[in-house]
Image 1 (cartoon, rainbow, N blue to C red):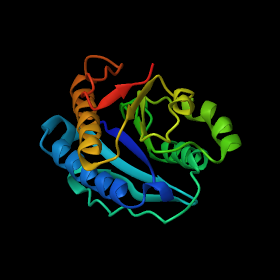
Image 2: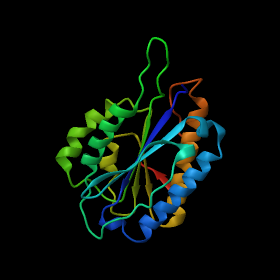
Image 3: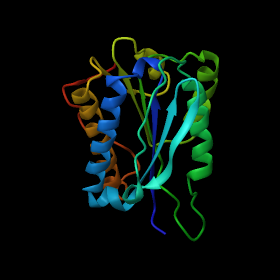
Image 4: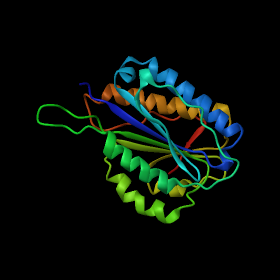
Length: 212
């Protein structure tokens, strides 16, 4: 059985994402899928899961091989909280369920990747604080977080990971660039895992600002 590169997308669908932003996210996801399917290394190993969060947590795409993915249309309520802490709790449970560990006779999956996209900050602040050590114990190869738009709080995301980027605008072009960069990260990682267990992110496009 081939080793899989499990990739978790955690996408904000709170009320502020309603309208053009979520339309742009859906277009970006389609571009991401197309790019991964055109890369033979990614097609062979990358599996994708999508979880959305607002006042509810929804696993809209369970872990699925890239070749078999049928993307759902992601929608937003007109209002709602940003339960990022609860969403990350759900991701922790998914990792526990999904990742195959190595055995004496067979190598398990590669370390997984987590990508978080939000245009705000967690409204369940206590749950968010409490889940951080649990998430870091999941042994992700990398966690990439994107703070989209002027109301996003990159400092909260920096508590999770050093790999935080920000988007000034939330239009189709910006989200497309973000997902294109994510695709390059997955593709590069799927090719390099045989030589190294670390993940080096490709340089981001000019639309993305690295949060230091």
